Length: 103
Image 1 (cartoon, rainbow, N blue to C red):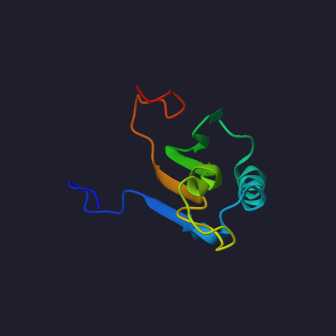
Image 2 (tube, helix red, strand yellow; image 1 turned 90 degrees about the vertical axis):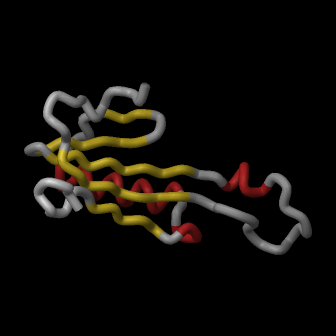
């Protein structure tokens, strides 16, 4: 919630970790392209759309390789985090380029 407006500042949708995979991310990205057009930019950590002062950021992190390291007992299924997929919708701060890398 905004401190001054007391309104909603951002909305984030997150896919359950067992359902976060490249195929699902492509479907989410394709749906966003169909609705909002081509992305404003694609960074290593996110694909970003901008429209009317709103920024939409789709993020997919595939952590299956890192999650498998250190797991014991082969054949026990996934160990640790298997992936992360979320879409964040938030106002774009005036004068801030959401496509610029984080410094």
